[in-house]
Structure formats: structure tokens, C-alpha cells
Length: 346
Image (cartoon, rainbow, N blue to C red; front, side):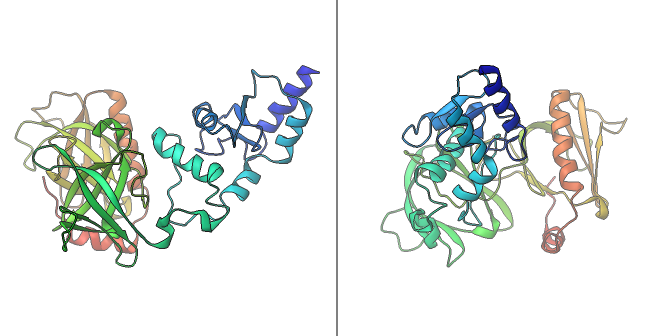
């Protein structure tokens, strides 16, 4: 009887929709919430355990199941779970993946199942009303200290603003949502609720680093960075030595910084599509000198070649895959305008 139950559960796992975690999309989930009727991965199962009033979990392969529980899973599953618990998800709401940090996935799971925000729109947090204000701890650009600052997110103005003083009438900065990206960076910032916000200021990229004590950060997230990490680079004449820099790939913009927590990028490179003569090549031109790391990458643009070097072969493969993903995607009409006025900063 136990073998039959196990076989029935494994058959359910192979149904269309159940082969990926219901919450983060991780492949081969082998845990399940037998009160919600969804199959989830090990990592998300740990988050479900933190909301036992809503979700109770079991291992598909290791725990004992009774027939009623198996029947409940058979009548539900991940397709049905998403149809129910995600039916009114706002179009701008970022759905985290298995590569995202624990905090982001936990907020998503709690919003879905505990607060039922995407079943009942009236239960959604104030971000759906188009306006929100609150206080975040912001890192100072020059001294590195975190100080409390008032932030205002307004959909009507399409902007995120922050103020240096609580009673200030004018904001210190206005960040247009269309030019803004935000991503959780707990390790980089040193706080489990750390957020990095990137925006354009005077045609240059500016970073600010913030955190909130209870994790309820500015919710209008856009996208994760395709790739971050250290590489070496050389200048436009390719005659000077290579320097180690921190690189961030944000969609078609490759930015580099002397330090991961720098407020401003030292330079930016626009990465277009293969139809527009952008290519990525493994290795460096034979005459290249001055690099300490041996795993080279050459980015060819209509204007010039950009030379980079990675410390390991694994880093090289990951960066090439990130560049290739962007280059293989045709450019959108608005991206041609960005390319036209984009300043290559070697």
C-alpha cells in the first residue's frame, strides 16, 4: 500500500505544471504543501513552515501520506494553485525566481497564501493605490554611514523621491520609475533587507543603497541584474594595463565600478543585438598584454572592441552567456533611442 501511495505521488509530480516549484519555478520540486495542494522546492518548503497556520508541508519521497492527502493533491496541483492564489497579481509585481534571495521569496509566499493579496485586491498593500511613503536607512555616498531618510513612491508622477530632512519641501533626488531598477542585495549591503536602487542622473548611472528594518521595502521592483561580479578591463586604446572592476549587467547596460558600493558608475557600455553588429567572443586579441586573469572576453560593437578578463573559466562562461542572451534578443524601438545618445565611457 505504501509503495502504491508513493507511486501515485510521483506520478502527480510529473504532471504538467507540477514539474517546477509553484512559488519560485525551481526544477524538480520534491516537497508539497498538503493544505494548499501545491508542489514546492526544499527552499520554499522552509518558508512555508514559517506560516504553519496556512501551509503544512511534507516530503514527497520521505514522509508518509494518507489517501485523503494524496487525493487533495490530485484535485489541486500547481496550475490550479496559481489560478487561485495569483489571479489578481498586479502587472508590475515582480515574481521572484529560485535565484532570488530568501527575503524576496518569503514576501511573495506570504503575500500569496498568508495575506491572500492576489485573491482579494482589497487586501493588497498600499502600493496598489499608486502612492506610498516611509522611512528607509540610506547609505551616505561619501562616509558609508546609514541614515534614516524619507522616501515617497508616487505612480502619478512616475517617480521615487527621497528627502534629506523629514520636513524638507524639496526632495534630494527624484528617480523616474522608467529609468529605475531595484534589486535585493543582502550580501553586498550587509543587511538581510538590503536593496540597491539604480537610476539615471544627468545621463550617468547612480546607485543608492538602502534597507528597512522589517523587510517591507519599496515594492515596485522591476528586474534582477543579469550578472554581477569582478572582471578586469583595459582602456579604449588597449595599451594600458588591465584594472580590476566590479561589473553589473542591467539589461542592455553594462556598468562598472571601482567598488561594489560606489554611488556612481565609472563607465557604461550599451550592448545591442546581433542584427546591429554586436557580438561577444571568447578570448582576447593575440597582441593583448597587461591582464593578470587569463580568461578573456571581447565585446564587439559598431564603434570599438571592449576587452575584459575573468579570474576563472566558470566566470567567463557565465558572463559570455549573459552577454549572448542580450545580443540574441532583437532591440526594441525605444532601445534604439537609448543607443543613439548612450555615451560609451571607457
